[in-house]
Image 1: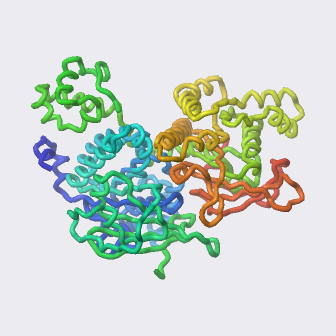
Image 2: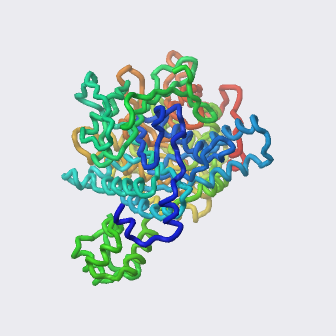
Length: 307
Length: 331
């Protein structure tokens, strides 16, 4: 903080720093625990295996952010960093169209063309593709400018933060410090961005590490204080899940800044041809686990209410 | 790692680099991580110059954010859906292979992965008149078989030869040459090929598991690292050149005895669409196969279609799904 404040800043930067960022607290009450939606500066980790609905949920949340207020959106600018080269614009648009059409039926007051409405929503989203951890780091530095000059941007999405894990592991040689250097620097920078600008960060991590030797009997209550020094794996243990792939494996610096952790699982059997996906969200602010289930439909995700 | 050196950007000279090295700053990452103000004091360099250099370096090395509205516009005009030639498979894939993404075929030996690749390659070169790059890692490409397939669709020798010319085969037998081949394609091969008339729209790698699976296992990271680099190259080729990438992979069984894609959890995130090929048990015709969609962001998973390897372009089911906006941009 101090380093930042001492630097000269122009009026726009000052305003964007002092004036509150748009709030994302009510982004999706179905997913986040009651009264514990992502506040300014929170970091949410989406963790799950392939095809467990992480990216689909991200689309859902992004759409909620970029839709106009009169359609039930938040009108918040979003920056999407795509490190997996997985971002599916067509999928996002078809989900967005579905949502806009839904609202149109209810209100039918708008005379705007649907295409134009989609476009005006999409203008709030910018997309960056990164192909290495160095590029990710430099891009984050570059984005600092964007955040400081655009107060409307409130959400940074990184899909996924673990994409360069193996490449970095190998190129770092023997020492763990070198292996994790780039991700640690990225994390430090993210930490600064969220503190100074109140940006909310959503990041996905692939579940690729098997949890050998874990004892699911131990269920620590997540600590209420954010400055907890407990080891991170213990912090999240209470969200015990069906999969044994929930081991956090990224560097400690990253584990430390995460405030919410969301585990994604999908049901193995699909009855009536509908796959049920479920999330379990834990946060360091509140006790307990918020669970929810959803289906993935043609026009985005639909929550299953009865749970 | 981008090393700071002379000539990397205007304003960086020998003294500048020496001054930074005294503070143990050798790479661009180190440099941009520092606050220019502190740096100016420590290294006694001009603050103005530092800020300017920092800005230029960032502009050179970072990826630029693109507005999603522009990206959407660009996608609508550039995305093509390449028909595989088989109505059943097209139906499963929501009308064909999409450019810009990786599609994976998985199946046990003899389930027809390579045959499907051949058929798709032949269809693209003959019907769609597109150049196809075919990376063969198992020595499985058989020109006779390709010709045979062409002969069923056209009796004209000239046409057959024309189509065969459009299938460019690369033979690589280890992961390093695969990586080199992909890098080479990305840096110059693809531009050259598109200059010579007819753009390249498809790249096939048959199979990725043949070269990758031997590298994995044990406690080594090298294999994983190489695998992710291969994946990264393919993703970049798919996205930057707007190419449909088709790869084949073997299958393993999970704890419950279900078939799943080989190469492990890390690889499983790589393809965007995955199709499982299986032999039909006790079928009258031995060439009958089922294709099951196991991963897709467009269609419901677990869709199953039947098709016949020998009668590729024959329709077995009734309807072909009509597709929304993109239909018009189909080549």
